Amino acid sequence: MIPPCKLKSAFSLLICCRTLFGRRRILHSRTVRIGYGPVGGDHGAAFAPNKVCNQKYNIFSFVPLVLFQQFKFFLNLYFLLMACSQFIPAIQIGAPITYWGPLGFVLTITLIREALDDFVRFLRDKELNGEKYERLTRDGTRVEVNSRCAR
View 1 (spheres, rainbow, N blue to C red):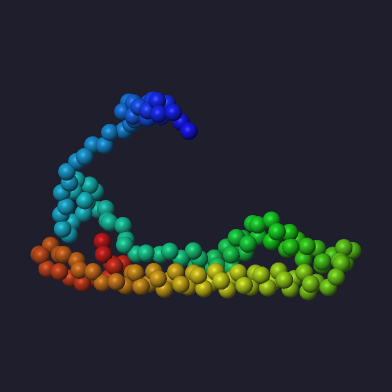
View 2 (tube, helix red, strand yellow):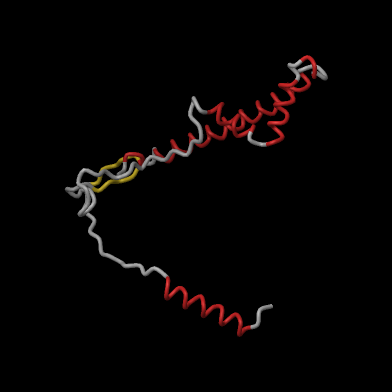
C-alpha cells in the first residue's frame, strides 16, 4: 500500500505538470445559420453525408478479404500448405480429401458466417438510413426527410 504522504506528493506533481504543460481550451461563440454552410468558411464546402455504412465487404471484396482474414492465422495457413503439399506425388501421404475436406468445411462455415453478419449489418444500416426526421427550412417550415439525406 502506498503511504498517504507519497500519494499526496504524486498527486500534487500531476497537478503541477498539468498546469504547466497542459493545453488550455479556448472557447469561442458560434453562430448557427439554418440552411447555409459554415460561417466564415468556404461557401462551396458541403456538409459531410449522414449516411451510415458499417459493412465490411462488398460483392467483389468478400471472398478475397475473408480468405485473407482466415489465412493470416498460422494454423489455417499450415493446413492449407499441408493440403497443397498432397498434390506432389513424392510427399503424398494419404487421400487429398482427408486434407481438403476439413479445410473446405471450416472455410465454408466461415464464409457463411461472415456473409450473414455482413447482411445483418446491411439491414441495420438500411433501417438507420431510412429513419424519418424533421428538417427546419429557411422559411421556418418543417420538412420530413430520411436520415441519410439530412445534412
